[in-house]
Length: 145
Image (cartoon, rainbow, N blue to C red; front, side, top):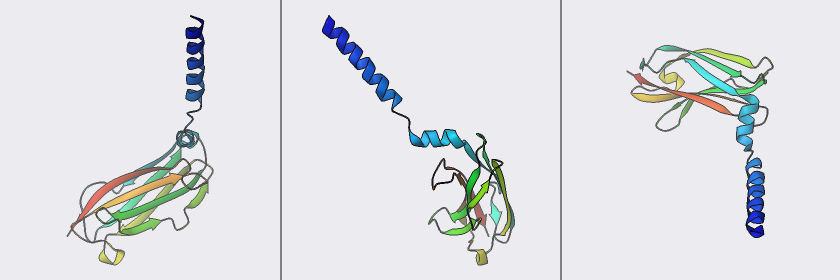
């Protein structure tokens, strides 16, 4: 009986320490920053070659942390060819915990776009170190002739 109680106590103690040690750093980073990226424009409706789209993305930290780095990029869904990546310097360090990105872009062959293709807009936000608390949102749209 003593052995059974001892083994139960040993097992419970081990389980306690193992569960306490399971602090996943990625989860911790996400909680610390609680970043969000919201793509408001463009939407997922089909576009035509020659259209001008307005890009509007909000980045925020619901934990009140600084928004250190952001990136908005557009790439071909089939072959990952990137045609847009802004801002040029991703390190914006916005202390208020919120940042907006706005831009207008012509969907033209001069800008790398092609008709009858699916495109992805990706908005990404992360902390001071590369990948720290990183969160991204994507939206897919197509371009017709």
